[in-house]
Image (cartoon, rainbow, N blue to C red; front, side):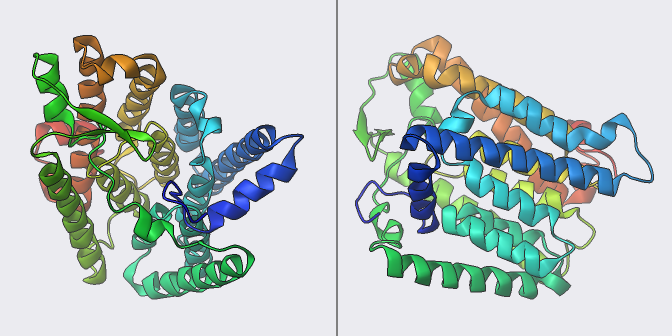
Length: 349
């Protein structure tokens, strides 16, 4: 913690320290912890599915657990090699604990100590329970940050040290530059903060624009939640829409983000009220394309070779279709029933 390449909230430092003592060396210890987190997510999904569907069991009742298993296979080895399984575990727990707002908030708070995005799950809570969830999350996050800061310096340094990150080549915003490169336009890509960023005229503005769009959409969903307009929408659908928006409008779309997406999609699928189960299939397909692109075609993407660009555009296209479907289901469910493409992906009300 405390250097310019540190990307995680303070809880991540504790987990990395645990990895150092969990096995004969830190790498093996990390993988062991990742396997435990993976198994814990599957156990939570199976238990929740059996509980929710105990009176009306069918093969589709285990859609959520199967989505996690198949999605994990599609994601590939990076699932156990990167940090993202751990915040996903607590995000899944927070979503499955929505009927118990204090516990849901606490789980989201622990997740936010590892990576910020699990805090979005709080907006899946119904309005009457939202503040209890927020209080639970704030209490856990504040206490955890205080304790970790007493243990090590620089626990919150990540807040100020990543502000200069640019538009990374794998992001949605970089698509125009990647496509132009495939048609012969000159490209300038530099390695910064451990990632390849586009350094071209307009890249900064595009990065700012997509960030503003993402914050705007998240703000609209939050406002509708506070106004009580989302009470008839499945909590998991709201959570999935928020996560997809945050990824689609990020200046980064790293391959490990598929872990977040598949985890939240699997948890959302446990709820029989969810309209986005079919979307989960496309998200798993997107994860499979991501596994092909990273690492096998990544060098070719940096050189904007046409075959790598096609895979990247298919990957981004699936993400955007799923994001548009999820946002429409959440904010305009009646419109989702009328638009042919979205109607085909979203289960009718």
